[in-house]
Image 1 (cartoon, rainbow, N blue to C red):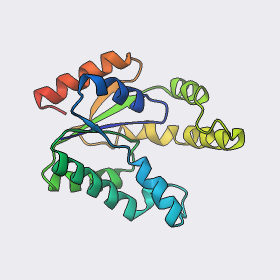
Image 2: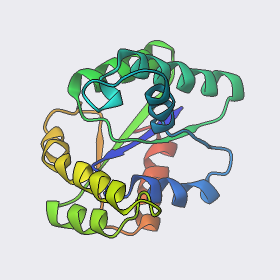
Image 3: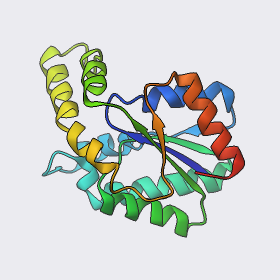
Image 4: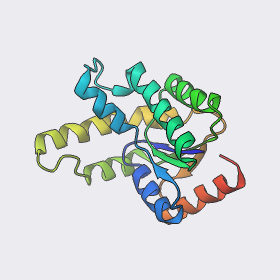
Length: 180
């Protein structure tokens, strides 16, 4: 099974997965962003967003399927994925491989997201790069908020204002009950 934790930058995806880890020790954590970083070292990303690379989407699926099949353990995936075509492509490929996908989306207001993004340091050794990343994350907020209207009906929306523990409780209850 895959538990995909989705939401805007600053919504708490990684924090939620960090809360789930000790409570679900058999689960693996897979961050598809790492696939994007590898591809950026090899090929040009014309749009600046590695999710636009078909190869990224294919490799994200292949690695996720491989982790589930090889290790027979649940996989936690903290990753913003909002383009409806890409969501359909990736989740469809995972489901076609026979993998149960539980999709959670953390909803937060623009103000909360901006505050959280401002409070983060992405590249502490490079203030200019840090600011560029912050700006890019903030530029994605509107499309992330709008994406909530395009996600499939089996997406579970969670209030990102809850504590990580409360969110983890909700995720575990839904996953254990078989709902998404």
